Length: 466
Ligand code: HEC
Ligand code: HEC
Image (cartoon, rainbow, N blue to C red; front, side, top):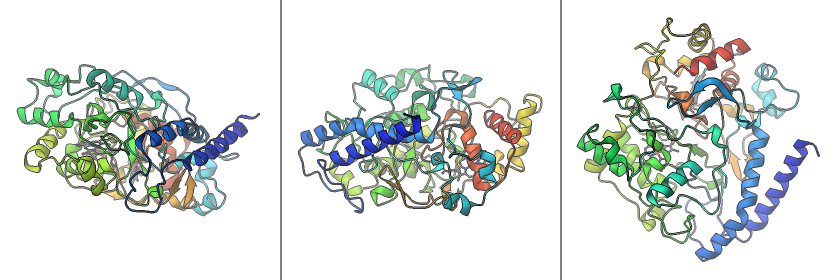
C-alpha cells in the first residue's frame, strides 16, 4: 500500500475509534462557556480515557506525519545555546502535490484558498485532544519531576506529541542580567524545589530567591489536582510555573488558550520562553497584558483553569499576594536574560568582523526586502511590542475542522522576540512550525515578498546568529 493511503486509512480508523469511544465518555458540549462536571465516577472516566488513548495518539501522529517531515536532520555544527542539542534544519512543512514553494508564493491568496493549496502545516495545530484540552508535558520533564519531587505530571488520557529532536534542549541554560560574567548558572540541571536554593544561593537576592521558590512550588491546576475530573492517576499537588517554563525557558509543554470559547475553537498554545521579558512591553499572544506581575497573577488565577474562575475556585486556586508574592516572582523573572549572541554589536546589528558573508546577506534581507525588521526591530529585542494580524485566513477556508478543532482566523498575535530564537522550536503561538526554515517560507507567503532560495538560506543563517 502506498505510504499516503496507509496514513489516510490509519487516520480514518483512528477517527472512527475516537468517535466510537467518545460515546462512552462524558459529554463535553463544544459550544458552552462553562465546562460541565463529570457525570461518571473518576474510575470510569479514567478507564474510558485509557481505552481511547492509543487511537487518540495515533490520530495525532497521522496528522503530524501528513503535515511535516519529522526526520532527525540537524544543521551541521549548530547547537542550541547550552551546547546540548542540535538545531534542526530544512523546511519541514510538506507541500501539496505538484506545488513548489516558488509557485505557491507566486499565486494570489484567493487562488491558494479556492484550490486548497495552502500546505497543511501552515494551518493552526490542534491540541492532541481538543475536546478535553489542558496542560501536556514532554517526557523529559515528566521523568525529571518524578525523580526529584515524586510528583506525577503524566496524564492517563494523552501523551506529548512532538518527537524529542524537534523541541528545545533539556535542560536549557539560564543566563542572568545581574551576572553576565557567570554565563549559564543552571549547572546543567533543571531547577526544582529540591535544588534551587543550593544552586543559586549567594548569586541572587533574598527577594529573588523567594520569588524563585514560589515559581517552583506546585499549585492546583485543572488537570492536576484532587477532583474527579483530573487527568492524573493520583490526586496531585498541582504544577509549578517552571514545569512548563523549564529553567525559565520552555520545554514545549502546551495547553489551550484560556481566552477563547467555544472549546472547539480554542487554539493550542506552545509555552513561550521567559528569557528577556524585561525588554518586552506586552505579554501573552492574545492578552497583551502589560506587566510580568499581571501575567504571573493571571497564569495561576485563571490560565491554569482554562480561564474559568469558577472551576478554579472549586479546585483550590492559589491567589498569590500581589504586593508580596507576585512582586517577588516578577523580580525573579525580570533578571532572566537572552542567551549571549556574540556576533551582535550593542545595537543588535551583526558585527562584520565576526559574521560570515551569508549571515550579513541574511541581515540585509531581514532589514530590506524580507521586511522582517518592520515588526522584529533589532534595537528592541527584535519585537515592536505590538500585536499584528497576519491574516493567514486569506489563504484557506475558515471553519475547517482539524481533529476536532475548528480553525478560525488567528487574529492579532504578539510579535514574539527573535533573540535566542534557535533555542525555542516549535514556532508560532501554537507551535505549528518546526524549524526556522519553515518560518521563512511562512512569512515569505504571508508577506508576499517572493524571496529567492539564496535569500531564504541567508535569512535562516542570520536567524541562527540571534
Ligand atoms: C502549560 C504550562 C505553563 C505553566 C505551568 C505556566 N505557563 Fe506561563 N506560559 C505558558 C504559555 C503556553 C504561555 C504563552 C501564553 C500566550 O501566548 O498567550 C505562557 C506565557 C507566560 C508569560 C508571558 C510571556 C510573554 O512575554 O508573552 C509569563 C510572564 C508567564 N507565562 C509566566 C508564568 C508564571 C509566573 C507561571 C506560574 C504561575 C507560569 N507562567 C506557568 C505556559 C505555562
Ligand atoms: C507584520 C509584522 C511581522 C513581520 C513583517 C514579520 N513578522 Fe515574524 N512574527 C510576527 C508575529 C505577529 C509573530 C507571531 C505569529 C504567531 O505566533 O502566530 C511572528 C513570529 C515569528 C517567528 C516565531 C517566533 C516564535 O517564538 O515562535 C519567527 C521565527 C519570525 N516571526 C520570523 C520572521 C521573519 C524571518 C520575518 C521576515 C521574513 C518576519 N518574521 C516578519 C510579526 C511579523
